[in-house]
Amino acid sequence: MGTLPALRPLRRLVSLLSRIALWISGAGLVLMTGVVFWQVIGRYVLNSSPSWTEPFSLLLMSWFILLGAAVGVRERDHLGFEIGLHYAPPPVRRGMEIATNVLVMGFGCAMAVYGWDLAMGTWSAKMAGIDLPQGVDYLPLVGGGALIALFSLEKLIEDLAGVEEPAVPLHAEHPID
Image (spheres, rainbow, N blue to C red):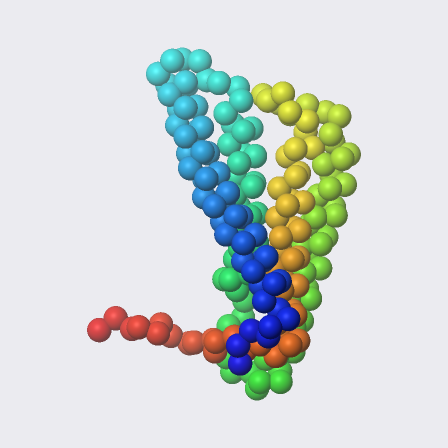
């Protein structure tokens, strides 16, 4: 069974957000690599380590990890119990998938809400080494959590609507000869 016509606008929006998150995540990884490289040059070549490089690279890492995790939820590449899904009878498998999506969606919502609380609660303090509010450190929880919740909602709606996902294989589709 393919995608239901009513789900197409949601899938297009979520697909676009997923691609944007993946590109931002990749750009953040490349930028962090450059920042760490500059830190090494500053420390070992110039004998003057820049104070901003460590907190900035940690902030970038938070963003690319949480955005990448959200994309993993959408692609169903997150941790799971695939062998249990594979051997479960179809009604049990469907129940497990629905329960997983509800739990992951709740987790994403909690990350976003409590991340926002942390960000607002620490906004008046300054980060060490960078002239940014400390609350900026918690914004990746908000963005990543919101996307995890949205991507889980998409999967939940698909599961409830009966949109079939490919079967969970137990081995590689193209084994090495």
